[in-house]
Length: 74
Image 1: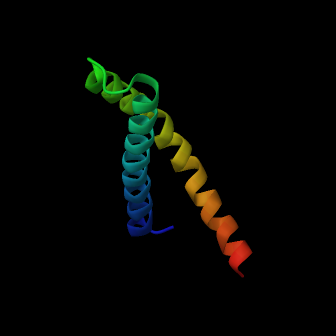
Image 2: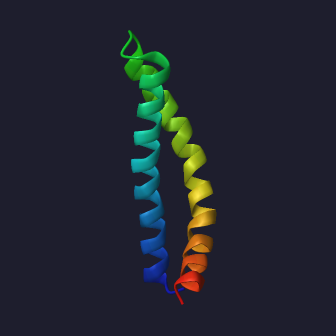
């Protein structure tokens, strides 16, 4: 993988993790807490934690999933 491709992969993973962790943590926070007092702090804490879990997970699995998709699509 060239340097440019590696940068693209890291950027892709980072942006997907931000979007997915934001969306999922927001949905789960609304389901679990509703829009109660302190909601914003709870959601931001959940978002931070979910991003810390999503980043390494996606970084590990994205290349493997891409290879699998390439094999299936052949």
